[in-house]
View (tube, each protein chain N blue to C red):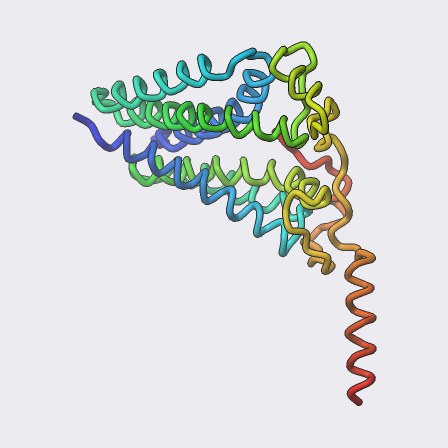
Length: 145
Length: 110
């Protein structure tokens, strides 16, 4: 018979990480104050660790602990996400008063565009800076000869 | 008390942490076009986990899922490096096997 424990752990890990990305972004963008959601995540995270300790079934105990750990990490990520918004590395939500204040601050780096919504450069193609560095190397080698 | 569940939670914590490291290094040295390989590696680990003892199955399942997540993170990491938020490797990176096929598939991201 197939051993489904690993599959359940994989689902818990992947969904935990998925929520850690999508859910944390949404929570941070829509919360006027991130402390209450962070506290709720910490309480749920600790409660799930306690549930895990008193659950005799290995699969349920593992899933509870994994989801709990990701919730604890998410509480920390809420603060990191807030920092990204302030730095302009994540889009600010003008409808959120906290974000509106970041946008209104003089010399603010906060922006409403999502800079990550673009295609990366082709990694197999030589970039201009690499070509400049290579030409310099060739010239210095030629001088030595 | 059952501490094995807690141990698995801590293992997933370290595997996710390790994921951040290998995604950054992998994108720097190899480039994001290698993304299908950690994805396949993760899927294979999860399939293998179906035939192992419960503990090994759990460890492989967690490792496989974090590898799949890492694959979905490589494209965004490449954009972050392009934007100057992370160190960018200006050297041309090795093309993965089947690169022309990979370029036609949109890289997944969360």
